[in-house]
Image (tube, rainbow, N blue to C red; front, side):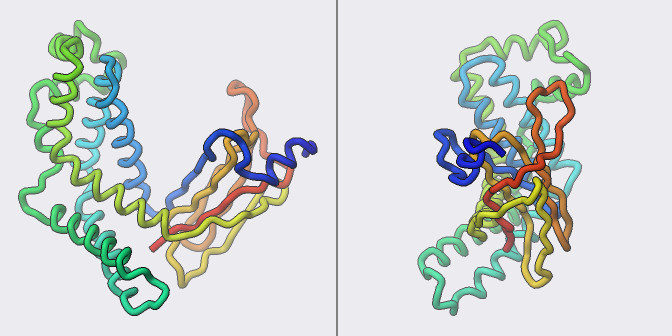
Length: 271
């Protein structure tokens, strides 16, 4: 490793850009949560964008969320996860190292979301599935280029309406999806905040770690400097995980495993 590169690695986050986090879920429930978070983040960017392509992308991601909720018992899995979290946090009441106000706020937040999810009136995605325009778009999404103006004239008309009108429609479609978004973001925030980062060295670009059977690890987070010349690939299960670092200077070439020692921040997050 060159002196300049070693210095940058040693300082970790001295670069001007924000550090980059890579996450690996260790169970299917959290994998689904991360996928939904990814979709909701894209939806928000599209809703607040001013172009027709922003609106098109937002609608496409809303339909992905709606279809996801039909195929998978996401609501049931979120309820199980939040009830498990609630039990854990309720057990911290007598811990002298816990901030009572912060604990009470967390318990209240979890309780509020659980009430919403358990309500028989809460049927996420119903608004979107009952919308005629959204249904027309859904039928064409599996066809490459299937939402061209000549395929769905109604979509072309909507995309060329006033941005404020498009935004209002999208906010309405999102109303019964907001509860899912709120639950997903709460679950992932609590998990990510459950562990403090520590600096680790991957000798020769490779790090492996056994997981303590008595502790819960749901997400492995590797945080790298903005200007790092390598990226991690994380794999793991309930007993151990590995981190391998790769470099890929050109997208047209295969990645090569790093051979230098790589310094990074690691979090094993779980409740």
